[in-house]
Length: 154
Image (cartoon, rainbow, N blue to C red; front, side, top):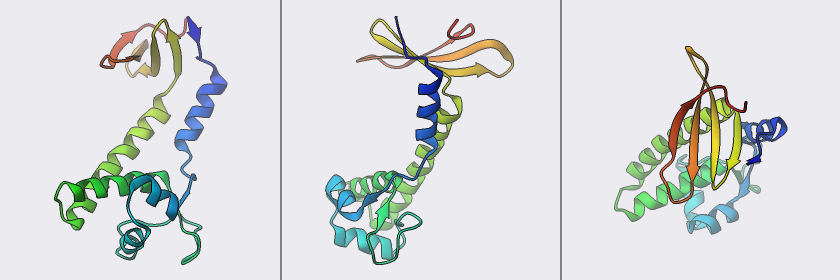
């Protein structure tokens, strides 16, 4: 068994998940998504996307990774035939779900172990079931399984 259930590692992962200060330039967003800088500026004018706080207007706009994901979703919906307004609306709904998912993981992540050919991700103790933890079992090419187990890591 390869134990990566190191408290420092878990603390660092949670810190990264909670940190939203990563930023990308408009050219980075354009290159990653295939959306032109001109179109990105138009979307910004329409307030569909916003540069990160601290970006000076008209100078070196910086965008969050959430904006990168939102731009990708908007473009995907446009390619599927949605209007720009509807594509933005759908992308915003998905952005809220993604942020909620990130919060769940950063709040609940308690440990990670590599066991044989799979990872066991401890999502913490179950409320009302002292000593019982939910563990996600991740194995390549298999659906993720959730199990209820006794105190994890012991």
